[in-house]
Image (cartoon, rainbow, N blue to C red):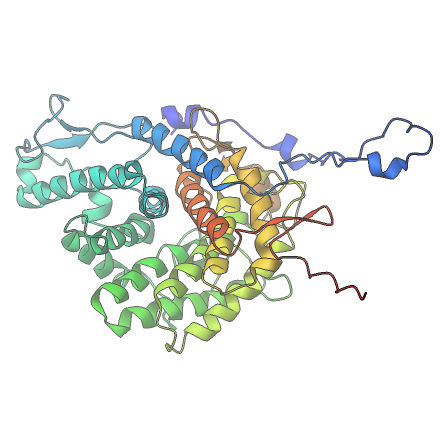
Length: 464
């Protein structure tokens, strides 16, 4: 790992973030002129732009991201023996490979990115987003078909699509399958063979606890991770939508509700990162991105689950409790912290984007009150937009993180623009913010100097 160029560019964010403190934002005003109320001259020193972002501003941020990723994550198939590029993907050599870019084109992080590209394309009408996803996924489909048709002995052990073709964990196929299902339903291509491989792993092969909850045998046997809420539920729910088979809807709803039964802490309105079946006590660490995966899984489920399904009402109630908990832990700069209830830990981008996406989607669908939570996502998006640099890189994202039982582990995880987890959630958050600003948040404005998403009450009529 130390020779990986991506990891060599990751900057450590340990003690200086774990011990950081927020500066006070108040300022001392100069002495006012005589007869002038000094309080009316004071202006807040906001660390983040406060006014709701306009649609054009949000769209520009998304445009920078897709332009960067188009060059930073190209799809280029090469001859694995000679490393020569293959121009015609219908005439592939027996041994093929993918030339690496800054990001892996087959990964759970990039499954979220493909889904984000599709959503951003739908919302903005900009062809660049869908073309990004379609070009790469179509190339992967052709390579997959070639690998499946080529005898293993002739492939020389080369299989750059092993996670798609031979999944061995939810991370391999969950988010990628969800993206392929969305692409399939959008009519972009025929990805059903790859979809079936992924779903045939998630449903009968992935390890489960006796009650059917999806689990892992790492870092210890019988471990339940909140991350797996997203690594399974969107794919299961979308498979239900594609096929109309109730068993997929049932399993998706079951996972959301059973994960919440063991990991969701009602008094906090937050998820602990994970637990180990059989451990009598668990320290509770409310890792940001674990809550992000859960929040996204909740809205992905509700987006396609029939409203008359018995799991819909409890899943909706869970989402509302979760968003309340997230609103109460938002940092004063607009982002959320690596450990949500510990503001001394650093502000983390990917989780913050996941929360903005989930809450904005919930407002757009009428599941939560935009008047109550619109200011939260408005501030959150404004802070997120500042994390996208001029090149279009998304900065401040925590790298991959396992399950742990001490706070320093989480507080000291490095963050980097090359951590792939931030790009898909940023695209999804921006897309839902555009929908919100065109719809239920179109009239967001200042009332009594604060941002509100509701019209102020009309003044009483004056008598003559």
